[in-house]
Image 1 (cartoon, one colour):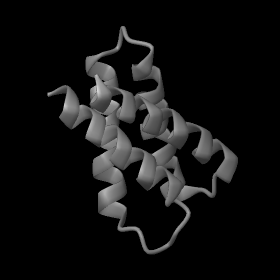
Image 2 (tube, one colour):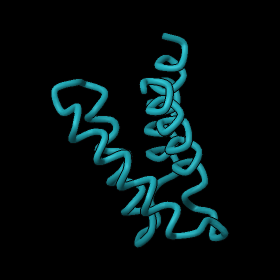
Image 3 (tube, one colour):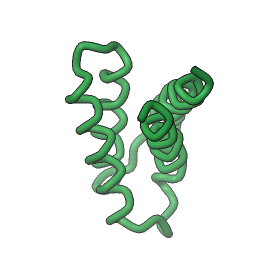
Image 4 (cartoon, one colour):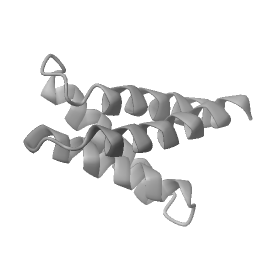
Length: 89
């Protein structure tokens, strides 16, 4: 189960990095954002869940407004590292 959640984190990081690209389907962004937020709310007492909820909110916001790339990069790196570490454990 942990491996699936780690893969979800890595996918969310990739989608966050490509959030500014117009070719990304909006449905994919909404589904990934919803799954990441849901995972964050399930494990709310973990510090990593703050990154999940923040990443999900940023994904949803990226559909409506242009966010700074540095902000997206920071959250993508946090989610990516969290995903890789959960796969290694």
